[in-house]
Length: 144
Image (tube, rainbow, N blue to C red; front, side, top):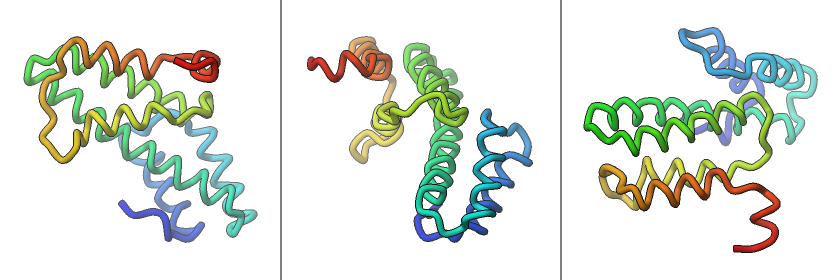
């Protein structure tokens, strides 16, 4: 879904569809506040960016949930566990309780591994990805 060039009205409609549809993601209060802000200030770049980010996270969350089902069906329990952890990060971002979208890079690496089909995760790679996702902000500022 291309959302970079969408107007505030289009973004509000998309957000409304997400949260009024079946099985809405967490963060409805934050989304509601964003809808109000977009209505009051439809040209505010900050609100437009926040809306685009929210929709990008929702899309990534949907893809991660599908990947969990695929991993479970393939018997890749380690991969499913890593994906579930990333879904938790998506939920946290949707609820406004994280300001570090670094988890998105790990999710995209799993979902789109350099143009190849996603294969079951080996335990070493899963451990590295989990470590990257769970690293505390202060640890990353201190270096490796």
